[in-house]
Image (tube, rainbow, N blue to C red):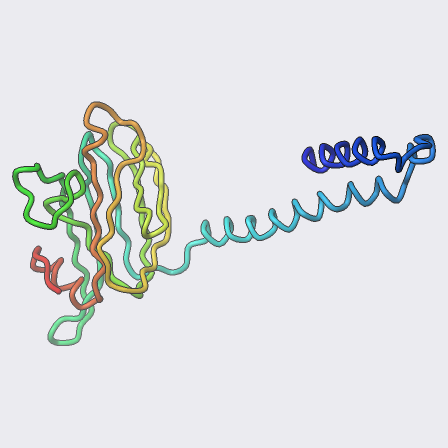
Length: 212
């Protein structure tokens, strides 16, 4: 709106200097012109706002998830809790719960090809082509669970549960970090997630070892 008014003033001044508007009083009350430069900005704003509202609603609505992962921020590491269904050899449905901490690896512990300040001792495993409900909270101060490649950035607030849905299409290695100033070692709270197929996801969590 401000840009439209500013542009119209520039055009008006330019045309006046060129002699197009020699009789200014004829253009002081142009109802049609005023209606046009009011409606056009409104249409532009609505064309941007409506898709944004739909997207925000779609992000907030959670579909029925098959797996729930809870990430808890601590100073300065992440704790993960997850429960997932699996079939036994007798084809009976059972649930397994796994709780583990994820700490950043020191530079001396890195191997060739690993990324400094982004590698962890126990990465988070996420199944592909599966709806996952991610619940984020904190135990001490404000943190922020940010995993840009998965489109996730959620504030971790003590005493509050925030959630978001994740649906990954293909296997990948995802990196992220805490995106909220949370103290001295804020820069050393990396997040590493491995997207695996569901069979590898279940087997790796059962054995507490990575299996591709």
